[in-house]
Image 1 (tube, rainbow, N blue to C red):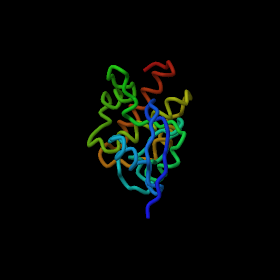
Image 2: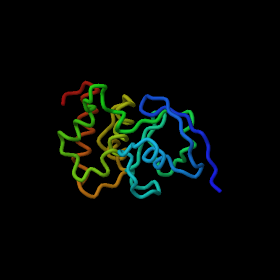
Image 3: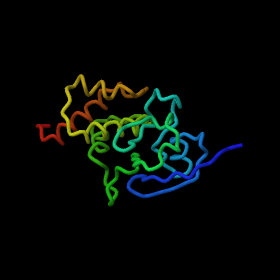
Amino acid sequence: MAEYKLVKFTLNGKQVETMVDVRASLTDMLRNDYRMTSVKKGCEVGECGACNVLIDGECFNSCIYLAIWADGKNIRTVEGLLSEDGELSDIQQAFIDESAVQCGFCTPGFIMTAVEILESGRDYSDEELRKLLSGHLCRCTGYENIFRAVRKTLDKRLGKTV
């Protein structure tokens, strides 16, 4: 017999609550209950990064994070990056500008990892940045355009010459 629990949390700036099966993943809750389709179901074992979301400012693979653990947390998905008037965030625009999107399946997870990196306010060497982005699998891009999009956005935010 399934056991359910009420989970209250903030999703992309809005207070929400829902009853969830205690065995459900955060991926399933976000996709099924809130239609956050940017949260992709890839490997479902925490290896590919397609399901990455920010939880209290830190990136997590939502496929291996239980939905009930979201109680009281602040969760952000790609849907929460758009401005009030529907403008893309700087990192989303950089992915377009740098042709860092091909099939697009891995893109939301990469973007959420990039948001964590960008919001740290730290400068990273190219080697450090590549390592921080390494927790993702992409079959299309070869990663270089993704790296350039993040590097250029980071440099711009830090006031470095772009």
